[in-house]
Length: 356
Image 1 (cartoon, rainbow, N blue to C red):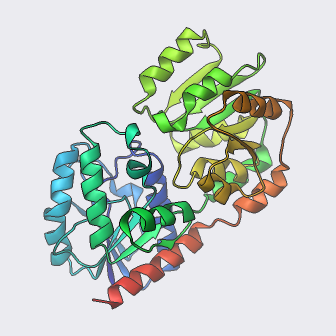
Image 2: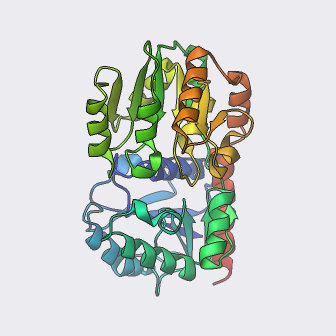
């Protein structure tokens, strides 16, 4: 089978969790599948080094920049179709929400969430119509759908009337290694893009532990200026640090030294940073929303993300000591495997290809 991978959306360091998802999934596919051929359709921003070097993986660079979104979308609907047909692709994996709607090989599209349906207020007015149209087309035209959580599967059934296979993310082995060399310092870590739904404004207002710092690591998003202004108004410039995007090695170091991890998001499709913190043996407190409960089970302290007092109490409990035994959290995290995700994804791709 010749499997195409639509990586046109990928901007290194620019798309957050979906980049981590794709890189880890492809690495795992390279380990578990040596018989099928993979052709990765990439853009001008993404170097070959980000993809597996396995013999059955090749890269087909396309003449498009993902940062120019209209051009990328147009090419995805036209140029990618013909590139896939020329390469004799049997099935096309679309790991970033969207894919070609017409004339393309059978598609398997991954939906990480349906935030544009659940919380349209978090989108810029000029972006929202494109999200609605393109994701509707992907949901309707794809041969198979993959949801990264049961919550997203349920949303796909609710809003688009489509069934989806739930395939959870895995967690990188490097995070389990961190647990053995932990050297905690007095700071809380939150790994999050600075978007409105991440609820960082409430986290900062609730943060009131004099001997601790708060480190927020993640891409600048739509709420970045508001968050920075809030930090200044509260006089927290010395105690709250916004790192921006950091390379993986620096992120590992942040987990290694973190006293605890907090994640106040009001909406998620999965919640990969929570899983990473659990694997690293970092005590976790997070929002009591369905996707995070699906990930963390009984291995985290939960709070109402809309209640600043509840967030403050969780911060106090984290500052005082671990609310959940780190060993239990690591056991829970070990249930999530990129190898299993790769095998399950491959099964969906094979099923889609057989129905041509």
